[in-house]
Image 1 (spheres, one colour):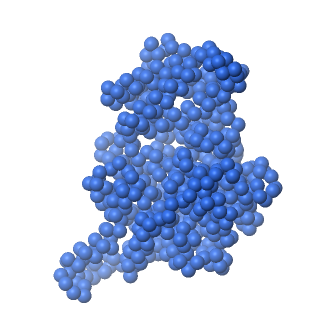
Image 2 (cartoon, one colour; image 1 turned 135 degrees about the vertical axis):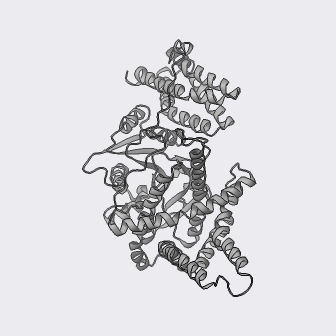
Image 3 (tube, helix red, strand yellow; image 1 turned 90 degrees about the vertical axis):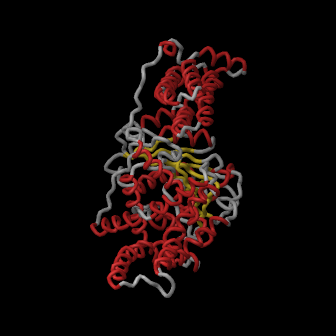
Length: 557
C-alpha cells in the first residue's frame, strides 16, 4: 500500500514535469528588488556572489548580513561597497548574532523595511529575495519573477526559483584526495544536481497545481507586504524552525497568499562532494521539515487549502512515518517469508514477480530521472551516461533511510543546534607559484590609459570613476567564471573567461593582469591544462592586487 501511494505520487510528479506550462516574462522595472545574503564566515565565496548579483542586475540592492563572522567576510563586503552604493552591509554581534538563519533574516527585513516607506503600494511592489552566500542568479531571473505568472499577478505573495549545482562539471571537487574519492565526489555532485532539477523541481510543479509550492533556503522571493503580514501575525516573518524557509512558505499559504514556482530561471549553488557533510546537511533539512508538521493544524483551519493541496502536503509531511514503517516492516516480512518458505504472490513464478515488482516500485520511478536529466535539462551527457546516472540516483535517493532516522533520533533527544556546513573552498589554499620576472616588470595599472580614454569621451573624471568602479566590482565574478570553467575542463568557457579578463584589463591599462590572462590562454590553446591550472592562483593574486591599486588611486584618494 505504501509503495502504491509512492508510485502514484511519483507518477503525478512525472506528469507535472513533462507537461508543464511555461512561465511568461514581465518587466522587472515595475518592481523594486532587494536580496538578502545571510553570512557567517563566508570569506571564500561572498565576493563572487555579491559581484555576480550586482553586475547582472543593475537595479538590485544587495544586503549582506554578517552574522558576527570571525573571518574577513565583513571586510570583503566593505571593499565592494567602495565601488557600488547598492551593496549594503548589516553587521550583527553576539549575543544577538549566531542564533539562527531566521533571526538574521528578520533583522535584515526590519532594516530594509525602514528604507522603503509606509506606502502600502510601494511595499507591495517591493520584492525581497534570499540567496545563500554561494548563490548565483540566472540572468533571466528578474524577468521571469516579474512575469504575469509570478509577481506580475497581485495575488502571488512568494516565488521560488529552481536550484542548480554550479560545480556540477568539476573534475576534481576534492583536490587533496585521490581518484576514487574524487569519483565519488563527482557522483555526489551530479546526484544533487539531478535531485534539484528533476524530482524536486517536479514536486514544485505539482504543487503549482495543488497550491502548496514551498519556499527553499536559496532563491526564494517574497513581497515586502506579505512579510509585513507575517510580521503582524507571528511577530516576525521567519520563524525558529531549522527549515525556516519551508516554515515561511507554510505561513504564507496559511495567511491566504499564493506561492509560485519558476523552473525557467534558477539560482546556482555549490553541491557537496563529501558524503559526511551531505548526510549532515540532509539530516538537518529532514529535522526541520518534521518540525514544520505542527503548522499543519493552523493551515487546515485557515481554509486556504484545496483538496488536492491537502492530500499533497499531508503525504509529503507524512513521508517520515511511512519511511519508518517501510524500514521496520520490509525486513520483518522478508524474514517471515524466508522462514515460512512463502515468497510467492497470487500467481506466477515467485522470483519473476519479485523482480518485476522491485523494478516497478523500487527502481524504475527513480531511474527515470537520470533520463529526464539528459533530455529535459539538456545536460551534455551521453545516453549511456544517463543510464548510469539513473542507476546511481536509485541508490542516492535511498539515503533517505539514513538521514530521516538520524533526524528522528535528534528530535527524540531534543537536539536542535547545528554547526554551519563548511564550504568546499574553506581552508583550501591553492599553492602559489612565484611571479615570473617578465610579469613583475609590467605595471599593475597604467593610469594614463584611463585618462586618455576618458578625455576622448569628454568626461574624464566621471568616466574614469565609472570604469574603475565597474572593474573593481566585476573582478570577483570574472575570477569565479574562470575558476569554475577550468575546474570543469570546459575549453570554450575557459577561453571566454580569459578573453573577458584580458580585454577588460587592456582597456583599463592593467598590463600585468592582461599579460597573465594571455599566457594562460596560450597554455589553454596548447591544451597544457596542468600548467594552466598551476598558474590560476597567480592570476587570482594579480587580479586582487590590481583591484587594490584601483582602490588606492581612485577611491581612497
